Image (cartoon, rainbow, N blue to C red):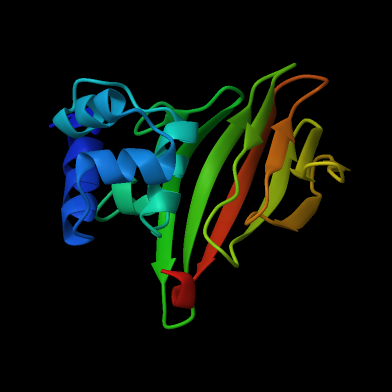
Length: 181
């Protein structure tokens, strides 16, 4: 089974576990019903933005649709999902009584900017830059961070990722509070 099939299966399981119809999840997420149907059937390639919209509407972390048991290490091309600027590979998922934390190896494409919609209430993101300089954080108040630097921001509000001067490589931590899930 390929990534599209696995993501589709997990989306369908999450949707039905919440007792939602295709139409209702489409309405809550802003994703078209046809797109959602194609994603669930594994015939459509999911984008990062679409998966975040769906998992946010389902009150689940992104890792809930990416992997049952994420591998401890992943090559950049294996299991990657991409948005308009960011390509992310889930490398770890940690869950305890307080939160679910997804850890991604990300690349922000040179010259690209991606605006991300608000995630589940109380969600935060932290980015450690491995190489390049990124502009990231809350819309209207982003931070510029370079190699060896890190930044944290609330991601339950719209936020952005940008790589104005070349590709950026980093490790992204997305922490979802358990109470919101």
